[in-house]
Image 1: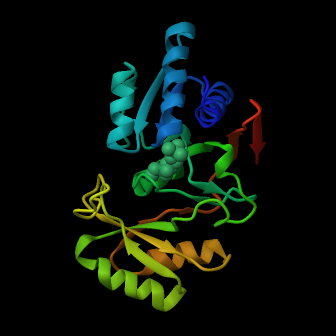
Image 2: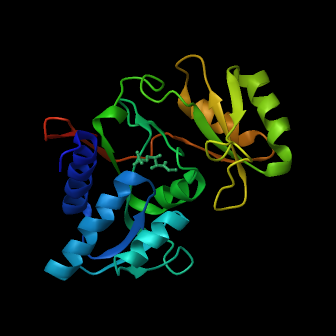
Image 3: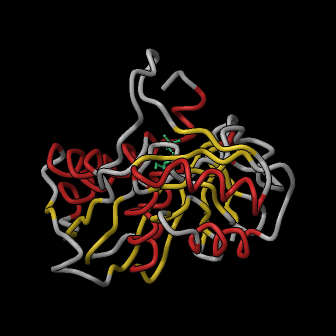
Length: 234
Ligand code: 5RP
C-alpha cells in the first residue's frame, strides 16, 4: 500500500484485531480506520474460523459488517461486548479522546461503555500530548435539533470558546443529521482543561445528547506510524 496514512491505519487496525479479538461479541466503531479492522476480522473468520458477532456503532459500520459477510448483532441482544474497536480524531497521552468527526459519537460511546475492553486504532496524525494539538475542529456535541442555538449559547457562556453548527457537504446546504436524527455542534475550546469536568458539564446542558470527549474509557491505543511501525499507548 503506497499511501503512508492509509498504510498506518491498516497496520494499527490489523494489530488491534489480532491482539484483542477472540470468539465473542465485538463492538465496531466508525470511520475510515475501522474499515481495515473489519477487513481483518473477515479475513480471520475465513482463515481461522473465528466466531464473532459484530454490533455496529453507525449506519456505516452496519454496512461494512454486512458487506464483509460478518454476523450482525445489536445491543438489545448483546448488551455486553468483549471488546469494542474504534478510531479517534485525537488522543492525548492519557488516552483522552476526541471522537465524532464522522458524527457517530453517541453510539460509539455507548459501545465503548458496554465493552470489557475499548481499543483505539488510528494513524500517527491522531497522537498528541494534549488535546487540540492535532485536531483543529473542536469537540463534537450531538444536540436535539430544536435546542442547537440554546445549547451553543450555553456552552460559550459556561465554557468559553466558539461553537459552530456542522453543515453538510461543500455546499453547506443544511445541517449534518446524525444516525439518531440530531444535529452536531463543533465546539472549539481555547485551552487545555480538565476534560472529565468538561465532558460532564457539556452533558448537563439540556438538549445535549452526548459529546465527543471520551475520558478514561480507552484501555489501549494503536497508532500506525509512517515508518511502518505501530506505537502502542496504554
Ligand atoms: C466517527 C469517529 C471516528 O472514529 C473518527 O472520526 C476517526 O475516523 P477515521 O478513522 O476516519 O480517522 O469518531 O464519529
